[in-house]
Length: 195
Image (cartoon, rainbow, N blue to C red):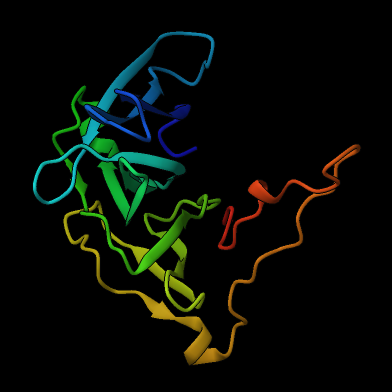
C-alpha cells in the first residue's frame, strides 16, 4: 500500500529439474501505477549457490513494507538436494527509480526451512519473518529492518526454546475421494504463510 503498486512473484527455471538445471530465477512483476490492469515492470533475479551453480528457488514467499519487498525461497540443486532457505530484499526507492540496484540476496542457509515473510499491514518499514529450524522443527523469528542495507542471514530467535512455542509438526494428510484416500505427497511441515 505505501508505494501504491501491485507486486507479483514468479518462479522459473531452465533445464530438466530435478535431474538437471541450467538456471533458476525469481521474477518480480511490479505495476507502474495503482492500476493492476495497466503496465508492469519485470525484474529477474538468478539464483545460485556459493560456487555459482544454479539453484531452483522453490516455494516463494512475498511481503512488502513501506521501503522494501522481501522474497523468501527454499533453494534446491538437481537431485533434488535441499540447500537451505534464502532471502531477497529489494528497496522500493530503487524500484521507483527503475532499477533493482538496491537489492540484497542471502545465500541458502541449510538450518532454515520455509521462511515466510509476513505481509505488512501498517506503514512500518520492518518485515517480520517466521521459519522452521530444519533439523529440530523449532519455530524461528526475525525481522528485516531498514531498507535492506543492514540485512544479513543472522538474527534469528528460536521461539520454541525462548518462550515455549510448540514445534512445527506434520499435519494429517488431506483426504480425497477414491483410492488412495489421502494425498501423502501434499503433506509438509513448516509455516505456509505469515501475517
